[in-house]
Image (cartoon, rainbow, N blue to C red):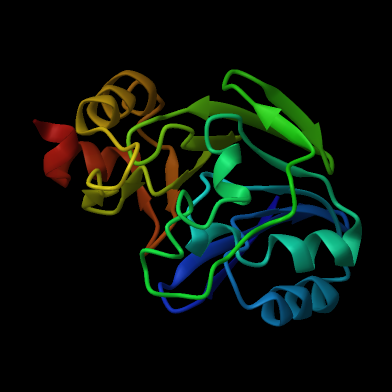
Length: 206
């Protein structure tokens, strides 16, 4: 399994292209569709799914372009699905940007699913807190955490629908029981390992 990391947009969202043998998925195509598509072309990839870890504008902005390029189905948790079509819910209006909307989802997730797509086995973990429908994606020792967990920090909980209590529950009861060697790929910033976060991240130590 190969992982392409492309920082996109003004908020430097980590868009991930996960692939092997010419097939792949795109996680959080937040902006810069041309850059993402250039990477997939360079690698000779057919994208078979788009997965949003949550519905905030900086993670969904290039959904339409990637979907149109590959006719790839879009996945998101059902609780964040309204963000795709509502500029207030996805916070683009509050950020002072032009109202942003996304194509509708093809599949709504609840958490607990195991997706077999593009030759990959993707386990969906529901981790509410930063948003009601935030999810993490587990693929063979790698965890894509969206804005739930960062290296040394966690996602904000002062947005509509966010909850600090739920975020702490997600961290301590969903993420922390995973193997310590799990590699963490967050929605912003550098990658880490769960063991390092358990030792140094104040939100996991408390």
